[in-house]
Structures are given as C-alpha cells and as structure tokens.
Length: 329
Image (cartoon, rainbow, N blue to C red; front, top):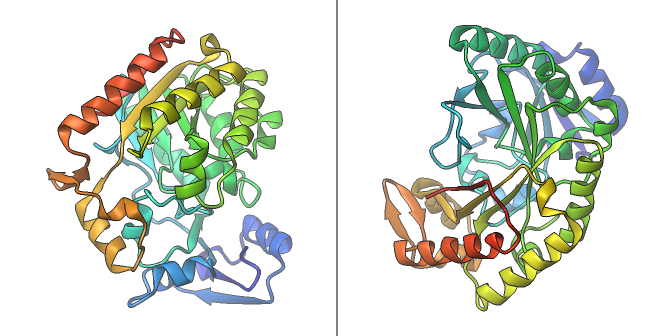
C-alpha cells in the first residue's frame, strides 16, 4: 500500500511527521502539491480503478476542525455532539460505505496538523462549558492508520486532560498496539463495528475477520478501556435471523456482556446522492440495487423491514442482558 507515490502539500513538506512517514514507506516518487484536493477531487476519475492503486496524501487542514454531529449516527445520549475529520478515506472497502460516493477518488488524506485540531477542540470545550461527545473521524478508520500517524494516542492523551470531553474512536481494525502507550479513561470510548462472517466476506473487503476483531476487543478490555459494540449497518440477507442469532452467540461466548459499556444498532442507510454516484461509478454490488425507500434524501430499507430487523436484534441482545442499546431510527 502507498509504495509508488506520495503526494505532499508544500505546507507540510518539512514536518517531522512527514519525514517519519516517508521513512516508513520509502516511496520511489514524491510529488509536492499546493492542495490535497488537486488529487482527491480529480475529475473523471474511476473510483474503483483507483482503489486498486490507492495513494496517500499528506496535508494540512486550514479550517473546519470539527462539525456538528451527523444525523446518520447516534449521540448516545449527549446533548452536545460533534465529529471531526483527522483523515479522509479508508484502507478498507466496505460495500455499504458512503465514502465511495463522497469523494472523486479513494486516495487517503492524512492531516498532519493535529495540534490545530486539538487547539480548536479546546476552544470548543471552553465555549460550550458542558460535556461534549466528539466522534473522531467517521470518514476513515483511525486505528488502521495509526502506524502512519499516532492520532489515537494523541487524542487519548488529550482526552485524559479534558474532563468535559468524551471521545469515540470507531474501528474495524485489530491493530491496537497503541493502547500499550495510553492510559484508559472513562471519557474514552473504543467502538468496534462487528458483522457476521458472511457479511464480512461478502461486503467488507480487506477488513479483519470477526475472530480478529473479537480478539481486538479483548485487548481493549484487558487494557481497561470502555468498549461499545456497533451492529451497524444491519444488512438484510437471506436467513437473516439465523445468521445474526449465531453471530451474537459467537460474540458473547468470547466477550462477557457485562464488560460492554454500550451497543449501537442501525440498518443500512446512505445519502441518496452518494448512492447515485456509487452506481454511476460502476460498483455492481447487490447492495446498491435493492428496492430502498428515500426519506429526507436518505436511502434506507422500507420502514416495516427496518423495524423488523431492529426489533429482532434488540430481542437477541436482551438474551445477553445488554442494557445500553442505542438505536438509529
């Protein structure tokens, strides 16, 4: 991955973190650019073709260091909900992911001025003066990128000093060695997205297996971190009930339900314009040709089916005495 060329904004060319990444990757070619969007937003690009030749772009974020929380995810009970974008695009290639329709290319952007994100968040905390829930980079998988830049470690250290700040790091990765260098805290939540084996094999290319993710959860729990399990998105497939019932049984044979802080449940959903772009890009996954409903510009399952899926999953989770279940309606 990233072995052929690295794109570097001239503003971060001299950064120590830039030099560290170059040393790790040792690319045969480096191209200096003015702005990351020159590469990320190349017009008339074939997204799927470029995924096979995914590049890395090192950049500096100039503004917008946080956003109001997305209506497509859950604030898990917090009044003040925000998210940020420390990186754009993902190493993985989950078929149900909106990123395929969000950017012209799949190239990964790493913003290396993390201190500016931290400073902006500190100012937000001062302004709100109340508990804040901040999701770190839903537009990527940060732990999977930790070997290039220590985002998770720096943010966990920061959260330990900011008691009004609650951060969530959501991942499918099993690369959690950074936890050995971090102190756990009640205001740090590690969220693991889990899927049945058949869903992972069909729709989540390049991701760790369910067994690998369960081992990662054990690592997090053994390091005394708070853990949330995310069953999101639920994918309606043949024999859904049998598949998901076996799935939960496998999870809770390995993980003590009482050790889990919370769970999050939601069905497949996506911005309608993103779905149109994905179809136009030529992705022929069966996920994109279901008879979805469009409501408030969001594509999702018909209401009756969506309710059936969620009711079934909540009933299954109740068998294991799971208490905190946050549902995206």
